[in-house]
Length: 126
Image (tube, rainbow, N blue to C red):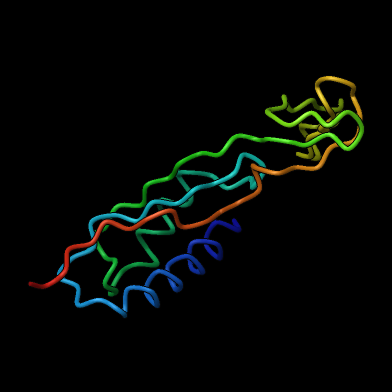
């Protein structure tokens, strides 16, 4: 369950950033999670609840926004979404095979691998 280590890193970074503010309350933290990260929403929500206990983030909501896969083709120049094709062993290996939807050429993934903090909804002391 690599979600715990990912969430711990996110929480540490958010708490570090929030130390710059005179906080009254943190309502939510919104993250962007790419389709290729293999991070589970339920596992991340559970980890967030546990990891934030006793911190300024305790009681805040973790909002997860999903980022679809987007690629750039090295051969024809296509740039856009792609369907994840799978080989016969996909269920045992969990590795999607990606290729250009136009020419079936080699691609570079430009979106879909990220896991980043998008924003935080906070209330500062007046």
